Image (cartoon, rainbow, N blue to C red; front, side, top):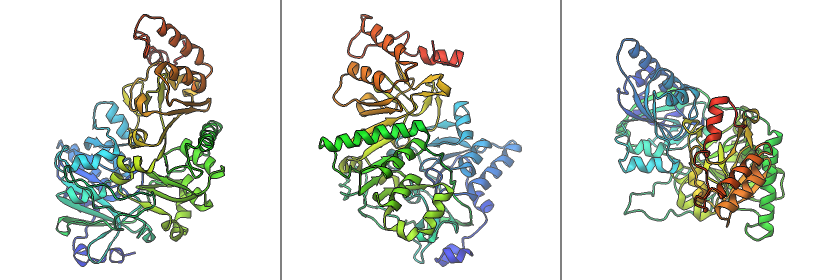
Length: 505
């Protein structure tokens, strides 16, 4: 397919060039906003070309790094390539790449972990400095210069608005049938001029199907033909299915008690195997006419749309396995009637999450006995991925679930600990904790009541006696009894693991 088939604005065709030529237009020290959200819709050619350029300059002894801002995680062609050549000075707001993670934890790359709903507005407010260049993948360009978004929206609207210069990657492997699936809202503003966002239902459209940009800022158009990072999800295992079963049983009880409607409330689901297991359980469960208001639409939600269990889904990105992508491509007319892709400032907006009453379901690394949740750090100091949008949904949702297997590393690590080694979600934002062992409904409970329930319902039996012993001794320590702790021992489980490879005493 020729570039002219996708780019129908004649001036843009005059700016066509190779990825290497476009990468040469990005200066050292620039802050670069690149598209991409959870392995979808990220630029593929320009970052690789930029990495080659940086590697060559470093070999000549010339320093070259950029600030890299995205929507969320990307893929090896972007995060991985630039991290491996030491080309990133500051990364934000979320990453999941092994090379990035290694450099961050080695102190060789700065990383700002930030709520995904905050990123765009921090850029508008000028909190993060100037955005020099935007590199954005699109599926096509209309004759009037409007852009057809690709498989993710993320922060693209903000990058196109705020960047001094724009490089477009036009990817002809992005399905042209995506046109019309997006809803780009241009009604936000800075305080004190903000107005309510006019949305009262998750499938409501409040914007337009295209991205706008100042045509004079477009300095390069690069033709690409590369697929997204389409990762295969593992089939739900017994642990994931048990977690899903506890959640579905709880929701059924909430419906019986009149605290949820029969078709629940809009669902938000994090990415991963446990999340897909929950969605698979819902697809087989008793609830009908469900809706989703989430960040990422993954395989499980496609299954639910296809079965009719899910009536509609709002997200900012797709994150599909190869098999799911094939189905999506083949049936895109069906999905376009049921899926809305929005900017992440809207998909994650606290105002909308609260108004719609979203049910938030997110994974965690560990929780402590009082319900504080760590979703980002291993042993308190090493970043795993980042907070992503979990905080946007947990604090503002109607219900907030956090899920994990009760143990990790073959049973060497308890995911329920005396004190969380890092806190991303305080006890005030965590309503329900779920492991394969059971579910702890923490609503209306004091800290010590929460501790008793979490230990009894969620901790693995191998660690339950030690947790009960810790709580009992903390209660008799003479310290404050609102949230009793033994400070010399509170993080001793983590220290024991660092020293011996196990939390077991």
